[in-house]
Length: 290
Image (cartoon, rainbow, N blue to C red; front, side, top):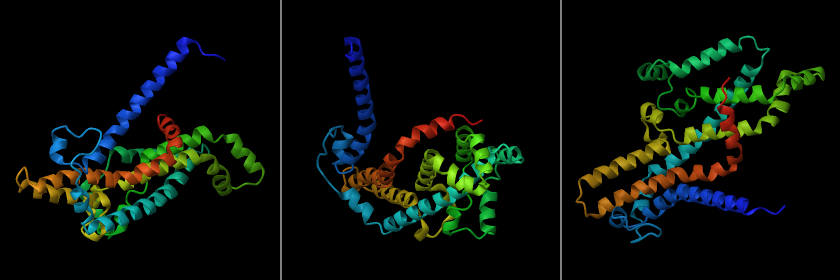
């Protein structure tokens, strides 16, 4: 069917708006890339816009010279992989159980979960608890105490309630299927969207984690990437503060700020497109927390 002039004009306007939106999103990332290798005096004066000028690699060299960077990457990958597995193993079965209408204690348990979202013991009692459990300064303090995120639990429960019909369970029971088999062989294969979304939420949470590491970890060999990057920035700020405004130390310190942004975000940006098609569905599910 041939489009009218009005429809063609609307398509042009729509694609134009989409193109502008894409540029507005991508340009800041591109600017960080070119600024990280450009002369910082030119960047500060607004003379770096589309291409890098006065190319220098001192910022990246300074970052990669830090011996803790490699161990930080290794630790973060470990915390993200192991932590996400633990999160999913605990969150998804719990969410499914709480979605079952024939599970009588579900309202009481759901109240207890939600209660923890608004009330907690506080930082000092939590620290003392971690100390008594002998989790301080171990990899497990980054995984076990925060194994279930209640928001993700609610999102997953809402998905199971709205997407897994009771009739499907009744038919499976009539065929002799147990609850465990029903969950493993029917529910999970039908829940790939929510599994991908919750995995993404947990993985990004672990990748960006630094506050708990700052509180509970003292051994630098256990530091995650974000905490290593924080220390690099702090050291560079001290170096730049003691140097003159025109010195190379200030130039490198400014480049380091852009370099660490790229180093910490690029892996997540690479991973995100693989689950992006499920992301919108997960967001819409999370909008209803009945």
